[in-house]
Image 1 (tube, rainbow, N blue to C red):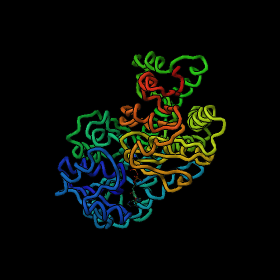
Image 2 (image 1 turned 135 degrees about the vertical axis):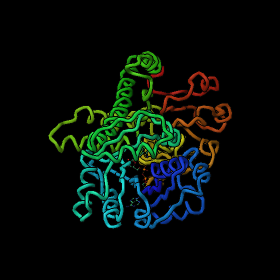
Image 3 (image 1 turned 90 degrees about the horizontal axis):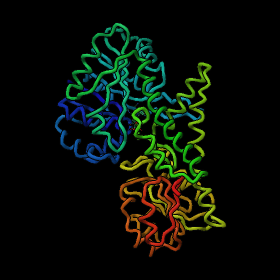
Image 4 (image 1 turned 120 degrees about the vertical axis):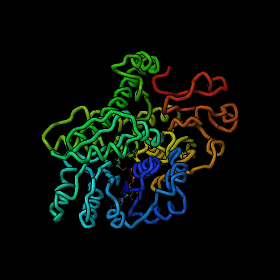
Length: 429
Ligand code: NAI
């Protein structure tokens, strides 16, 4: 089967590599010519464990190109995996998705199954269908399918190969697409959840909103625990054993980030308000998340009389471990706030680079020792495994101060206290 994956980002590249590994002929296309140039040279422009190896293993049936319409014509199946960022008012910017729809409408000359992997607000897939019809494409030439993606950056490959479910939203009367999709995914052993186009769109948003809610919920509980001298880790263990709750997504810390949760919760709020539903829980979830960084700034301000001109080391830039993605990273928000407050920030991350806009008073170092040198305080902002295993005895000798602010509650307080360091977490008395 010849497949065209449109969009060579985190989702598009992982999808293309896995589909090629399943034995399909895959052409992954993108408008970003620089990205395509790198991919053609065998360089993968993002960090995702196992991705580079999977791409090079399948180079005989996986190609990269910026000739989009040529590969749309050649394929019988098209995956849309372009970005759906937030507009300033919270509405999803669908311009990339719709420009792909236009591209398909202009190129289509044989039957295509058009599968949307991008996360799109309720009603979008129906609009994609209508766009093609409005441009004169006959309905017999295509079907639109909503097949939202649930992979997590950092474990994208295994999440794609072993998903917990495959969600398929199809149009009424479409009896062709499901067998086609099952053939594409024939190597995957997972239950199919089949619904209509808008149902599948809602499943994706509900899933992300629920996970974001768990994170904001535990962060709120941690704020209360802290005031009562209760260890949040005990509370997490105590509730996490209940199968109705589960221990996942119950780690308190600096808040959720990344390219999905923040924009998707906002987008769902927008979709609700658009239909005169006030989404009180979604609004509270965002409010808690927005103010999490304040909590850590307050903790730092409590440590020093004046934060101005303090040397603060921030370990972690990406929004979570095992990715180089810094979109909506709470670590980046923290760094930006510290820089605005006049601190000198020395940052380190195993994979991520500081976004261009936060360069004032901020230096990114190539190793932990250089970042920690002369620090008044070290902040753990992303819970990379590397930071859980640091040589604190050595780091203490490099630091000027002795405070470690664990903004992810991810290191063992007893372990670092034995070296004369002061541990500050949230609700970890
Ligand atoms: P990304 O920003 O990494 O990649 C999107 C790619 O699409 C870019 O390379 C861009 O140049 C390309 N593009 C934009 N317009 C194009 C066009 N007209 N033709 C061809 N290429 C075009 O985005 P990412 O993170 O891969 O996300 C893609 C979609 O998947 C979004 O809707 C996102 O919400 C969703 N998603 C993302 C997940 C993640 O962990 N990143 C997980 C699940 C879903």
